[in-house]
Image 1 (spheres, rainbow, N blue to C red):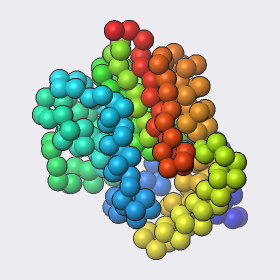
Image 2 (spheres, rainbow, N blue to C red):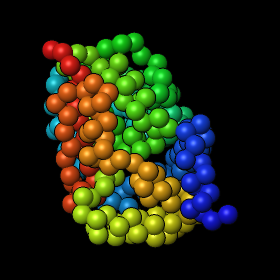
Image 3 (cartoon, one colour):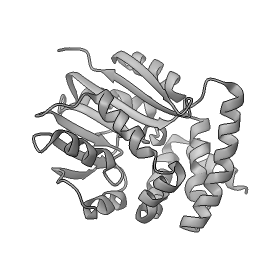
Length: 245
């Protein structure tokens, strides 16, 4: 079976995707941060700063970094606002959280394993939910958006950064072709596993992109939804608020 077909058989079945994604990230946790730097040439840090700007973080807020990985957004949020920001990091993969715990940086209140489809938090627990490269990985994207909305306080905001779908068809096709080749090469060079990052273009092909995510958020009940294109739409930031004040 080809690599592409092997990945597709796992992520096209929502019941199988959760376990596949969890196992995939468990295997790459130790070099996840290095791979992010190499793949983006370090630019992912600027894109994450854009997430914090859109989130409009303020002292005293409660923030959930969901699909936190090793905690980039959690730490950046604390550094930007200060110790009065109450930040929790949650990820499906325990191995990613364990790497995050060992990284230097400001303290995070909680490192909690959890599934975006069934978050271990009461209603209205957070003023902001930040997601960095996570929506693509959720087995039930709409269900996860509804669950995030439940956990947001009235007037709270979700902000997500992910790989995007450029509106220009030729650019979109070229971008996916580039990812097909580069992710396999880099996955093998850094992880000795071509599949470790070949998952990215395959998951992106099934992802609605920034425009589709905006429509889905509106369907789920978010308001003031928007989408920002970064890098000609090859990266995208989505945001939306829970109704209320």
